[in-house]
Image 1: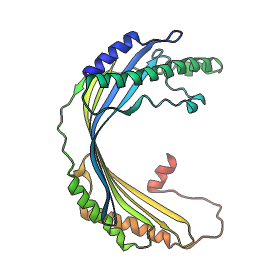
Image 2: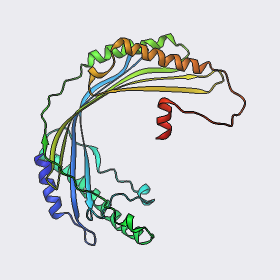
Image 3: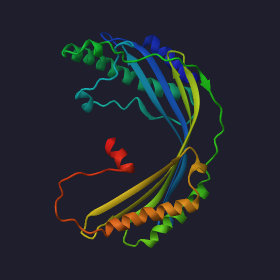
Image 4: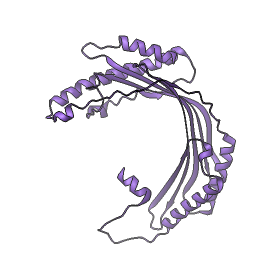
Length: 285
């Protein structure tokens, strides 16, 4: 927080390029995390690691709340996509290193966004936009307050996860015609640190775990088939128990096996199709 605050104050006071507007809003979001990942296939552990990880997200707004650099895109952005606003940081709590990393990201993001605002203004002048659209704000203020929560994180028992994935992935041994199969586990255990130039400051614990089940096969006519299923929770205890997981994997594998043996449809079809359950949500998205 000390490094974030000092860098914010300096950039709000001094960041400027002749001919372009200075930033009117800057925010920093730093996530301090512990990553755990395990992959197993056919009863054996393929890969496993547990390591610290820190990344950042820098927001720089130029203009004002009525009209700023947001909500604008042109083809030039495809050629010069600015990834500096996001990315990894050093995991050591070194004041100078954190400030330098935030400064480099802020400087590059400011240059890109200041130019984007000028391009946005030019584009608006070339279009006959309705007044209702011109009156819409690019950013609305919200009532907020500082929030600092100290919540101890429950560490992930990697050995327990490895044993679980070995047992689950071994279920695919009953499907010898599958080309590839396995179970992955990911855990993200983090504290999010946020600060902006308007004085808002918060620390928020964040947890997410994911169990990924996947398999690949080849249909009788040679068509490649693949399916996957993701189960999410805020922590390890929110995942289904072992018996439920085994039942889900068996149902998952049985569906793919049935699809592998499904009769080949050779004639064309022209008519209505109904999408249900998850397929409807994916189609709508």
